[in-house]
Image 1 (cartoon, rainbow, N blue to C red):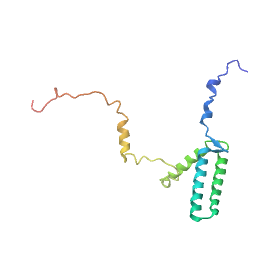
Image 2: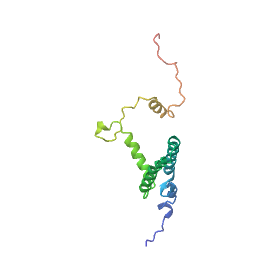
Image 3: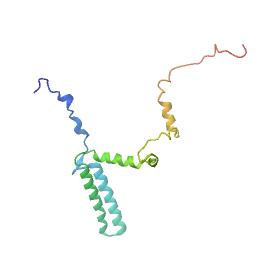
Image 4: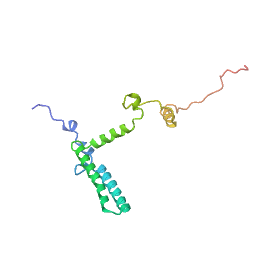
Length: 144
């Protein structure tokens, strides 16, 4: 044992548990609710159109998706968020064929939107708002 006192208050933060997602049966609550609600709405609309109880088989893919989500989030509760970011990045690959299939950020669209100029002009407005007046007393004129 070492003689120095333990510093639990600075070394081991206890409020990290507040960052965890709410889980229901091993699946994060919000994605699980979205899957269940959307699948139930599709099943109900299908039942009202087709008038047969066989449309409840639409709920089977929802169970498969829930089991997939449970398997992914078994060791990490943030894994679904990471998968979502990966899917979003994959869908935003517009010019991947020009760069060997990689996700590349291009600056060629800079300046095509009004928002670019507004951000550029607004970033230094605090420094430029000083009181300044021009005087015409000592200016050279043509007729003097």
